[in-house]
Length: 376
Image 1 (cartoon, rainbow, N blue to C red):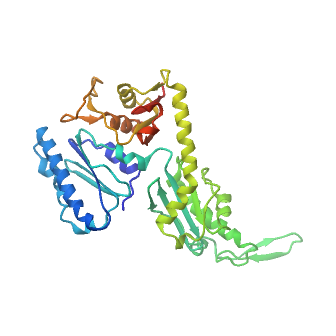
Image 2 (image 1 turned 135 degrees about the vertical axis):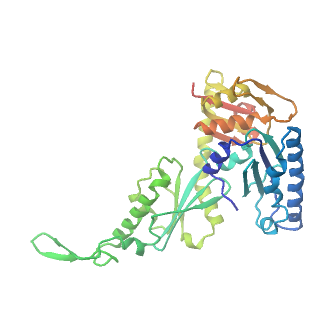
Image 3 (image 1 turned 90 degrees about the horizontal axis):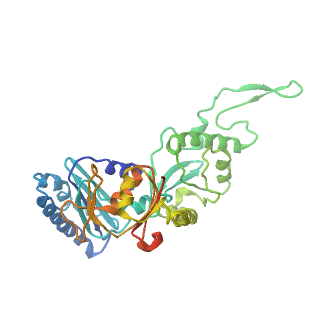
């Protein structure tokens, strides 16, 4: 299973090669239906190639070849999730096996269609899990659907390794009365309180996480035996550590279990954030700082003026957008070269630092296809 995170999204958003082909399909994980997965991909590729030919593209075979190569790859199809997303362009191909079911969809446009991916990247729904023990440290980054391990560099892998950083030479310290005694550093010898070693270990971990978490506002859930978690909270400089943690040894819990337990902790926080964002929109909906008009929202998103955007998942509004003239035309049915204007608004809002909530249609405030709070 792949983890789709912000760098992946930004990579796709910034791809300049055209045309861009986006293919989404629901995949079966087990049973006889698994055999239908490559067949359905083949059918979707035919649709994509037909659209490319309609646009007069000459390099159709070269663009779709990486996807065709997957069809006979038995090993690839043996490791599927609930959905598969493929992104193809001249000299560019990416595929993601994901734990989210997609509707079968093909979009050919001048940029990748990304709205189906946004629930996995929904603003305010990203979090970290830090698994801790005296012999184990792992960091995971996740969202509503899954977590994936984050590579750590320069972080001690255990308490024993952390103590190697200490000076192993004994030193003499004078105490009241002028009497000196030897205090041995390294391996925890001579310590009055073993918690001091653990705190030093945790400080080294926290320092190693600094580069990863700098500028982040995502909550961090700690996972470990109960006496370790308050010690880490005591020394960490990251301000968004949750007060509740996943209690128990993280070494003996599957990644799926860890994700489920951490999600139970952070999901109420995310729900409050969505409700607060809805309230902010409703407060400005009838003012110049709020809009449910798609054309206005698309223009504002391209101009970097969208602060918060709700957009309906599973809804499409096909049309064209001229970046030079800012002219927008909406079509009842998709035409060759059309883009999903809802997707365009979401992608541009995200690129310009806006908060994007990709939600079921019923959760868009005002019962519209999108709702935007504008910065100005």
